[in-house]
Length: 79
Image (cartoon, rainbow, N blue to C red):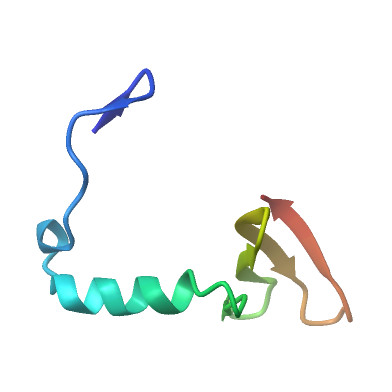
């Protein structure tokens, strides 16, 4: 869809079988400047992934962490 920084068409939720209203509702939650939502994707017997939507004014982004079940901290793997 995007090449050399030029997008020809913005993706629509319907392309993936979703309702546009549902996608808008999720976007409102994930991008709410009053919160930084996070979710964890566990794996069986190994580290899980944690995704944090950082909605700080002037410092927004998405952080990806690796959470080991036997550690009290998470390792940042991508920003």
